[in-house]
Length: 379
Ligand SMILES: [Zn+2]
Ligand SMILES: [Zn+2]
Image 1 (cartoon, rainbow, N blue to C red):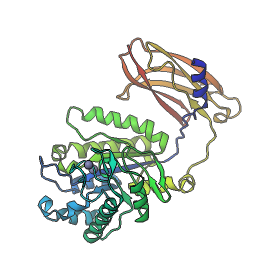
Image 2 (tube, helix red, strand yellow):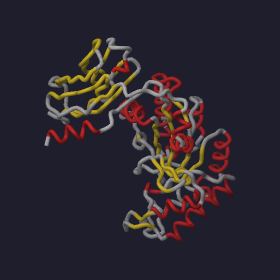
Image 3 (tube, rainbow, N blue to C red):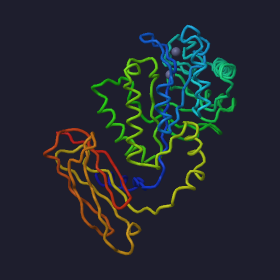
Image 4 (cartoon, rainbow, N blue to C red):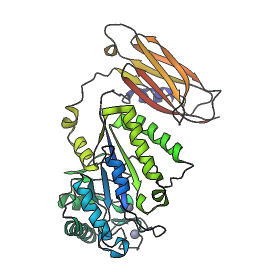
């Protein structure tokens, strides 16, 4: 059995990272304005200005029908969104009114999560078209991006969206790629601010940075999801805005020009046409690989294997290789390797007997090549 696992593991593509690849960063806000009645909806501009001052763009996933409900904001949302468009931000269509025609829930719309079946084709069709009409009449736009309320849709939804010339769809559950001819999907990566408080502010910030270092570096894209900060206490206190600002500042400090702030549709266009994206990326040979540790979870010791290919070093010269272990806050807890090594395959033991149970990251670096993986210590 172990042998089979080892073979399967060796067949998996190694996690290859190259220092110069751009990382596309998207700020996506879902549900503006939601029907949260605890706090009155607030102006978008504080969030938007904090993003703009760092060169970032916002993708507003907008419920069209909210633009018609004068009780919500007396038309001010329409004015604000028109202004956002002028500043290069993006409006995505979030269903029609975020209310299910079958069960009345405000949690979904295209696919009924209560009855576990898709809403009839004709109904979905008019919900999509009605939403488009509202966005056209109120904001003068034809949206390129659709997000299904409840992040749940079916193949009929995809078909209807493609018929209406939507280019992209984005949810929280699907994988990136083409869902139907002409309709591309690029979902959000993570949400950190839904229940943001002063006490979890810093741990959420660390978690986000580590996720960008792992998921974002690996995939070349990171989509931060915010759930309507404009109807939350966190927005009033400025916590969500300062979190977003501190996150963007940290990313720029760490990655500099590698960070490219784009709207969700722009990110989708980059990944839809890989040749366009790849044109500004230097081709790199498979020069370093970091394997998943085994056993995992482990207690207290585990094996980490990695490979330094000859391409990484001229001839058979030595290069400094570092393998370090980090905790979830980004602190180095152990330096396993820090020495000159020749190209070749290496296997090292990591002993965590002095560490607490929990998740750790191990990071291999040689020159500008970096690879990161997660592991779990369980006592
Ligand atoms: Zn329903
Ligand atoms: Zn929603």
